[in-house]
Amino acid sequence: MSESKKVKTLIIVPTYDEVGNIRKLYLGIKKYAPDKHILFVDDNSTDGSQEEIAEIIKKDENVHILKRDKKMGLASAYRDGFSWGLERDYDWFQEMD
Image 1 (cartoon, helix red, strand yellow):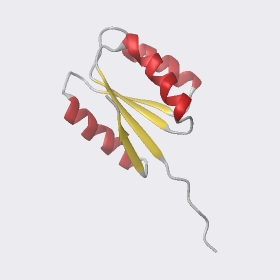
Image 2 (cartoon, helix red, strand yellow; image 1 turned 90 degrees about the vertical axis):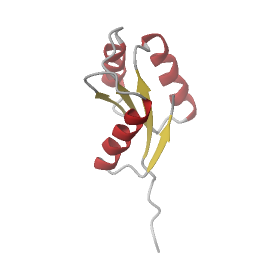
Image 3 (tube, helix red, strand yellow; image 1 turned 120 degrees about the vertical axis):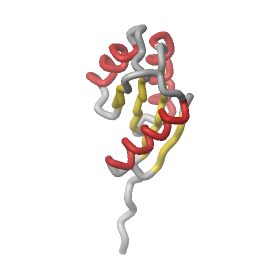
């Protein structure tokens, strides 16, 4: 008899100066996918986005941030997010933008 394994899912969200949208997006994801993990890939935002994400992380251990040194673009944000997730044994990835 085999035991079914719970699929570990990571939602990758690239951000750059999105402080006004981060909490709304987070709450929407949690409403419809409460058990999924979220990785914000931030391109060195200057508007407080990283601080907003840090506040969410304090309350939700399934939220993570990957801070990048400069604006590097959407494609590389997804690439870096996939790499981050693979290093942590996620099974499934979903992109959000």
